Amino acid sequence: MSLVEERKTRRNPHPLRAVAKGVQEYLNSRGITLDITHGRPVGGLVVIDPDTGEEDSVLSRKEFTKVLKHEIDIIYSEGLTEDSCYGEFVLAHAGFTRVVLTTATGDTYKGKYNFGKNENFFKSRGIYFAIKAALDGTCILEGFGSSV
Image (tube, rainbow, N blue to C red; front, side, top):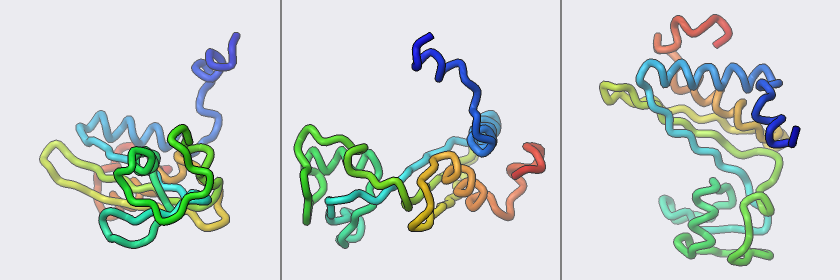
């Protein structure tokens, strides 16, 4: 069995990964759409944030692609070429996960989880805690389980 096939058949070994996936599936089953954005610090690259006009070195994969297409202004780059990939520049620690949840009636809930500067970036952790922050004080997750 190839490594790819093995990964497809393997269950989510980390408990938080399984819970985060379960919460996403539960929300989708209730007609709630999720827009998830992950941002990670990048080494050797500083850009101008198009929204604020300030220096920024925490980018999502989508923003990194815009940098390569020259759609975001670069202040400083070390080793960046047209063939560069996101994985070459992102750091293993810190970053954030932002979620926007939209219900069928158009209500939106926003949440964000900031990883500590020495905390390993883990998508499932970010998704779980950002959803939890977005839905804090609501009854939307009632019925999902007592672990949330």
